[in-house]
Length: 347
Ligand SMILES: NC(=O)c1ccc[n+]([C@@H]2O[C@H](COP(=O)([O-])OP(=O)(O)OC[C@H]3O[C@@H](n4cnc5c(N)ncnc54)[C@H](O)[C@@H]3O)[C@@H](O)[C@H]2O)c1
Ligand SMILES: [Zn+2]
Image 1 (cartoon, rainbow, N blue to C red):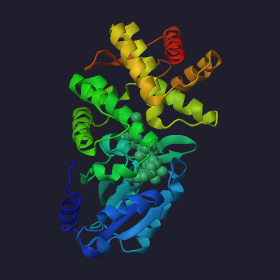
Image 2 (cartoon, protein in one colour):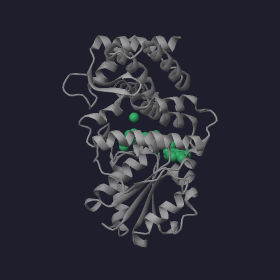
Image 3 (cartoon, rainbow, N blue to C red):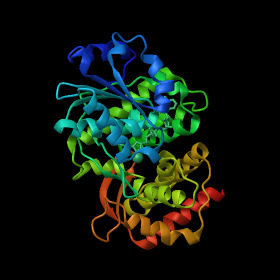
């Protein structure tokens, strides 16, 4: 739920659990920047706190083990509550640790980055990176509650803010012209957090719409992968070059290329495609790509876990709000889409 009464909502939820069974998972940054906002919560001092190191590079089994060990040594049992306060790294890891400890204890997510508020904390996907692969180990398990408060976003840097914004833009593109229009109007340089709160609520409703219809991603939940097949390839390529892109930036760039595929394959109107591509570049900046990167990108798309066999499977849009899943595109079409991405970057 999106609320401006975080303290009240949290203390009510805590009330159903024994005082000595409350656990809080934070990372170094959410401990520093976000926990102080909870200081007025009734009985907040009852929580036993586990601090894990910040950053995607710590989304590892070692951090999960740290949580399990603390829970085990401090009397956690099936009646316990784990509250995860942090970005997507903390909510994914903490939710996984809670879901597997003693075959599952209840957990609440309090996401503190825009990406985690509109995406990571909704839908029940939990897990950690393993063997060099993102989210290789995990389970799908729903939190008892998700509490969203935009006050946390005030300490978030601009790059992380716009990273989360990309998922909101995606929600607009796949499901709602109205949502897209409000996102286009919003001033990202001087965010009005009250307006943002309403837009986050809108975005969460859209994500939930797809998750509830298809929790295990057998069909329509794949709509949420728009921009992600090429986006993940950009994300991996940039990582291998030692200049990692944030997830949302990679998705924004992926959406430009996949808008082109949508035009080729599904008839998305070219005027709107150019307009949206220019807007995305204005928000996310330019990303230099060379034709010599194409083969590597294609290989990376082939390895995307959402593809079956050798087909490259895309989620495309026919128009804003009209999504088409399980679309196959040829290597030639994909290379043409990468050409379009480079042209837009050179404008
Ligand atoms: N479960 C899902 O469905 C799903 C969906 C999308 C992404 N994810 C996962 O989410 C993660 C990315 O999420 P993220 O971008 O939130 O990353 P993150 O949790 O690493 O947060 C980004 C940075 O911001 C810091 N931070 C968090 N809140 C802050 C605040 N309020 N003020 C200042 N700094 C703050 C963090 O410590 C970190 O350094 C990835 O691991 C990704 O796999 C999961
Ligand atoms: Zn994403």
